[in-house]
Image (tube, rainbow, N blue to C red):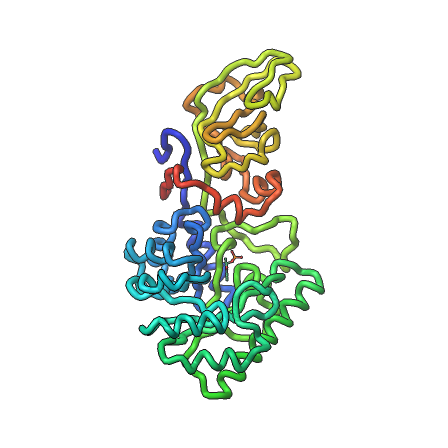
Length: 374
Ligand SMILES: *Cc1c(COP(=O)(O)O)cnc(C)c1O
């Protein structure tokens, strides 16, 4: 059996393969996936995910920071690993040692990297309206100026869309504006003889809503949807896509007891029994990534029955009201994300109950959870 003693994550490689195929069919044949495996591969485990993707033919990855790139390299991941975030000058040796590609976050940073004295492989980030990272798309002479630094080996130019998850006219118009700004920079660079760099623009929603884009890109940086989840299910999609969740989250019931009418349970006695109830303690808590905002809000599945989280989520444990499930015993399994008989809780539902998005739930799943391929 796959089950572990305390709390664990089950990973489904067939579902990952399915999602990868969905994306490959959406993208033109020449566009390669560059999966985002940052934040421990959205909680799935970067090493497992990197290896699984590698087996499926993926050769490009993106991560948030140098340490994440190092972890993948130490696990034997080959191909290009792009660091999307800022790398402090004191960590530049590691970029070279581990063969990582660094994002130029603006012109001044490019100049700083160029003064490092050794060659670095980089992708140039272009700010087309999100105003987070990248040199301003309007500052063409600065962008072009990056090619004058001998130590920078520029192999990519990219931007990031900030409203591609929306289907409203305003959101989609902004996507088109960002793309036009990006394409203009790319065209001008090529017109000036700057060649040999790849381009990329889309994350998950940029791919799912890709019909609204006009350019052709070499890579697409798929994250959340590759893991079989949407950020917010309440946001309508251009059309339905069948994505299969790669991850399930489960934990053990450790103690079952009756709580008499009028008694409270958990810290602060934040829940009270209106009538006598059967309460189960479960060995998973907010240190494992179950948001504390699910106190008195969350739910789990036991033998296909949905049961509510009662009282406050603790660091390592939480309580479920299991009154409606007959003869619940210590050692039984509670499912927080995934299937239990014919019922399923998707991460999107957990995120909604917690007042956040799937990305935050998944990336917050803790190191203490065992991760098992099923
Ligand atoms: C995280 C990230 C992605 C992936 O985004 P998803 O919405 O999860 O697909 C792509 N590009 C950049 C720059 C990112 O930071």
